[in-house]
View 1 (cartoon, rainbow, N blue to C red):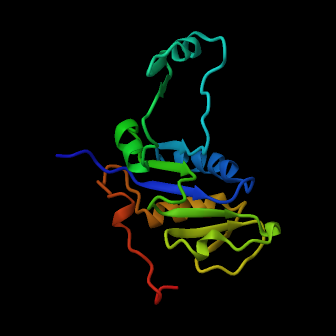
View 2: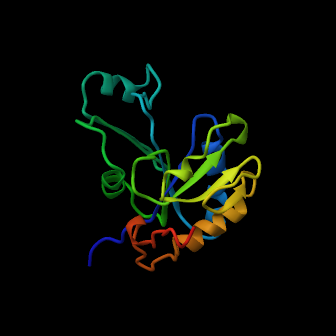
Amino acid sequence: MGRRVIPVLSVIGRSNTGKTTVIEKLIPMLNAKNIRVATIKHHLHDFESDRQGKDSYRLKKAGARISMIVSPQKVAFTADTERELTLAELVSAYIRDVDLVIVEGFKEERAPKIEIYRYSEGIAPLCRDDRDVIALMSDRPVDAPVPVLSRDDVEKAAEMILSILKLNIGSGVQGPGSRKKRTSADS
């Protein structure tokens, strides 16, 4: 029997709209429902995951292609890649023992998405052009082709996530590709 496909949800939005804050509030709500969550944050530029001067940082800078630091409570892993890995590749290679992966970003990837929207920007929400967006969380009421939630209503967002992804622990739920796509009749 193959490995269960872990459902993925992407939280998208323009810079400084509160994506990380919403994810930070969603995780404990989902954990309270016995949902084990992994997160992946997409970053457009190179980054350092360790502090300068620490042994693991020094070893990576010395040329190690993979560097790990391990304790009884945690494992941290840094590896060079020849190209940017797809979301599916990342989940398949690195994510284990969770029920849901919440990613920040990955706007171009095919996955159910919740858009975090700031009305004051005066720019149309991304959901108008992205058929994978399942909900919009906004700081003010806005007309959108998907359900609109208050950015503060994280509990309702958690319920929606569980409902839409039909997230049942151990159910063998398929990932994002298995959900029903909206049609023009659904809008």
